[in-house]
Image (cartoon, rainbow, N blue to C red; front, side, top):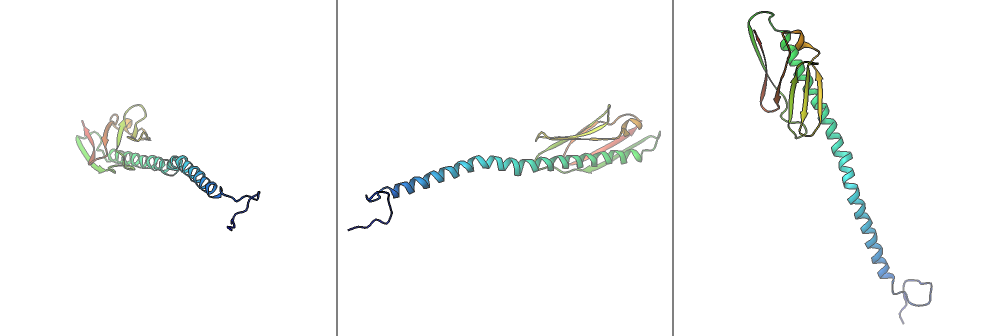
Length: 155
């Protein structure tokens, strides 16, 4: 005589316990997989994209401040009303967070250094009107690759 190891509410032998355990494991596994499918895009947004955008914006601001400082330093050494050509070369990072970017120096009004990249993030830094006070405005653009230069010519 076989004794069943599982208990039942009836006196009949329990022949469904193995099937119900398999259905339980299958349902729990399905729910866990569904939760992973939902959570992975959220984790990517919260832990990767957000900090990358903050890093990119801060780096663009730092690069804009550096370019602005170089322009102001160049204007500080200009020999007023003397014939002169002054050229300075500088290097900026080749990429920010693995993406290319552009530096545009926009003239009047406002004299701005605008940095924008392929990621859609941009930053704007003021030149504090230095271009208008010294023989006209400043303008131009550059990419991040190679050495960049700022040039002053009078007349």
